[in-house]
Image (cartoon, rainbow, N blue to C red; front, side):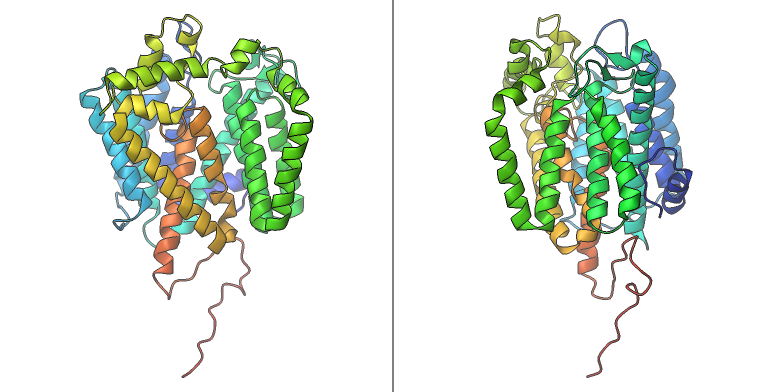
Length: 440
């Protein structure tokens, strides 16, 4: 399969869809429906889709994906300890919470997307070459992210009003956004692309002459984003990749970054703050205020919350602050699930994320050829802490997480079958030849 994060690389799109088949097309529809959140100008912030966008974009995308998955339904056999079963339980709780949800229509829609995304990976992980199909689904996810990020930057370069955010970035006085992608979201997208390319290059699955142009492209997207969180994601994840390659170099790199951070702490804070007020910077753009309000709401509905996917909306709707009421979410996936699904949903989702992280780390040690998938677990964690992430149904993060846990489950299944051989996408034909068995 031809790996590339360039959205104009037709060969990469074609190879990904040819490997994945109908599940790949279904995932493409789900991602577009989840990410094309057109701004509701009547109020509610850029993160809230307008009713028209839900009717004309999101609903048809879900219906098409559902019909595609029904065309040839099949589910891979799973063990009791598989992470996919944990995900299914979490998505199922989302769906059941429609019964007591404060906004049942939104809970039903988000739970449908969660279940359909899971079904895509359940179908793709069945039969031979399942790992290759999961790699293809990851490729489709990255290409969709890259495509929408590129459209946002093109609109910014053309100085279209809806694509320019009057907020200073790391190197620019204004930053890029889009009706379907916030400035923070662009940073998350770009950092994920950078991490995957670096990890694939480090694992020798792509050559330097292919990796460097893709890194430059992703860095261009990153340079006009407004997300400080994505800078932290990028720094931590790159240090992790270096550490996995060489523990000594990794430790020295961490120490070097720590020393530089201490020496230039004032300059770093000033640069990160930009034109933002001190009060806004200290409260993380109002995050800490709504987080406090979220804890108070959790105390009222501790067991099952107010409904999956609407906990944050309920908190913000009653916060009594005109500025904060424009926020799209609580910007913390753990609090989103705590207020939405209560302590039961929180424990289920958090334990799934923790176990997946440990298993991904172990699999990375044993199978470094899949570093481009496992490295994204850091991205999932950081986006869940500082945005909605996987626990609050952040479309592409859920797809990334499903790529990770499905790969981990399949690798664990193969290790239980001694006759099975792993076949990474860029091993030589000679390397794939079975070893001669020694007689005796």
